[in-house]
Amino acid sequence: MEQLSVFDIYKIGVGPSSSHTLGPWKAARAFINSLVEKEVTGIEVELFGSLSKTGIGHGTDIAVILGLMNFDPETIDTEQINFYLQQLKEQKTLSTSTQNISFSPNQNILFKSETLPFHPNALTFTAHLKNGAFQETYYSIGGGFIVKEGKEDTGIVDRQLPYPVNKGADLIQHIEATKLPIPKIVYQNELRFHPELEIRPRLLKIFRTMLECVYRGCNKTGILPGGLNVNRRAAKINQKLLGGATYDTPEAWITAIQKTGKDFNNINKWVCCFALAVNEENASFGRVVTSPTNGAAGVIPAVLLYHYCFGEYRGEKDLIEFLLVSGEIGCIFKKGATISAAMGGCQAEIGVSSAMAAAGLAQVQGATPDQVMMAAEIAMEHHLGLTCDPIGGLVQIPCIERNTMGAMKAITAANLAMDSDPSTAVVNLDVIVKTMWETAQDMNAKYKETAEGGLAKNIAIFVPNC
Image (tube, rainbow, N blue to C red; front, side, top):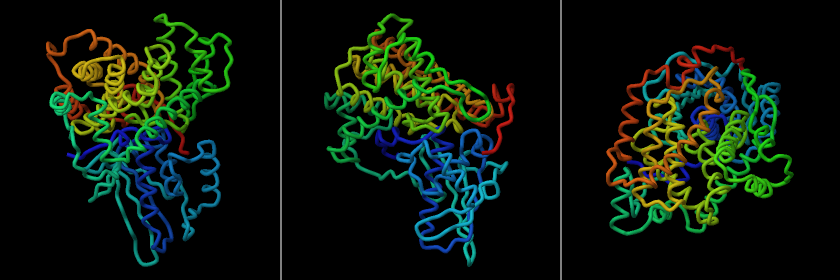
């Protein structure tokens, strides 16, 4: 089984979807960079399955364009995306370091009705050459991971880890044998992926990106793009809760939040505000941290900021431990089930993110390793069967509000686990992972990110092409 780093789960990118935006973006970059030594006259892109059915709403076509233009999703100036798109539409030319390639988005991106066998999220690139054609097919398998047909292209290298973890039972076994806590087990494995001097700064960068995303979302008003006319709500909630307090940096904003009090209703509203802020940014092609997906990117920042603002926060140690532990839980779900809504419905996104957040929160609140695992199990247990039915294929309704629910369930799960004796529990994490995967396989395909069932069917809208 593939070995994963927590940085395979936590990726910095652009919304609104890890599987429908980030994955196709990465695939397009990989393809355009494979053409450096080829004389190309034109490029055609075919989108299949879920990428075709909800591609416009998820911004798949935009992601493909930006990828073919070789922009990096981690560093692109998100404020300039519309300018880059308009420039390409006017010039109808992709300019690479070696050549100019004819490309018209409306003519050269094709939405196909069929689904390819390997995975619902498939896209085929064809480069027309002077002497024939060059073609590659990629699959976006969730969480920003991509696989090229015939070859895995996730960037994951097989490594011998000191403490390999495929299941929750493996993690517990290592803890019993070494007497090390979960964060140290995960950290020792990370040393096989990354130099020691890189790990802490990268984890803190993940947190900083999350914080900045929440901050932006809590200070922007307006209507989200896509045609649903969804109003941003986080900024209004933020202003109401702060009661006129002023600030000019994320740090000053956090201080103002901490002064608003710790009563239940106040904390509940702030957690919801944090989650809404991230996913409103995500829906508008803002920079987010995939955790483990973009559609579920608000859950973990909301729970982490809950602890940061209202819990017994102990400094950067808590940020590091929270991300290491939650990241490992995400790895377990990816290995044993899926983090792709196109494969498993929204239980694979909000459910997994809630389980990750619950485990991370339990860890920094002082839970035992067994209680940490129990927290993750409880959170997923109460997301089993959650469908993915985005209206108009947009990552807005019900996606944005679902992040608030996932965050609150994570907090509840952590608290329940810490007041429980895991040795008496009937259900454990590995049973839940197995059950989630079985549920995913049994779920009707129309509830797997197709916009053909549930709310998407009952509230039909027309989403114009970009």
